[in-house]
Image (cartoon, rainbow, N blue to C red; front, side):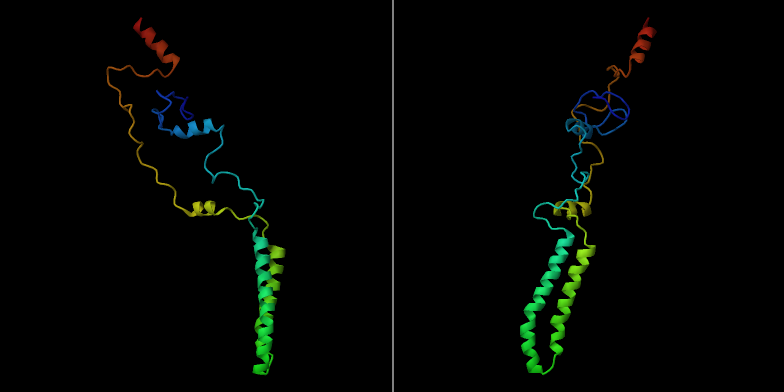
Length: 169
């Protein structure tokens, strides 16, 4: 495998960083193994189609408004009985206002609610989480990063080999 930044061929395919430019190569190996599809779920395209079991913002709002209407209707009879004790219709203002609020709530979400499904909880939490800490230096490798003067340097191109051969002749 060649480095996509500088074109140098590392000594081994298990090297994590390019010895010439320092480009991280382990991610390139993963991309090649997956035919260029990233493994990060945050980079995956999000679909706007609600999954089964997930409710859209619109449906949740309409349900909430319906619950308010139901609660106000359930409250009406006890409050109506309380009106006879107080001898006035003032206590009926509470269930009437909750009823109207529920109707307006349902109407608002019916007209302006978003039909897209919310992102799954794991992605919502991952968006606000701090990025994972990367080590400042690569982990130690079994191959030393230095070269002894006895070793011959790695051949970088055909031209260098040809030039060296011509100098020796």
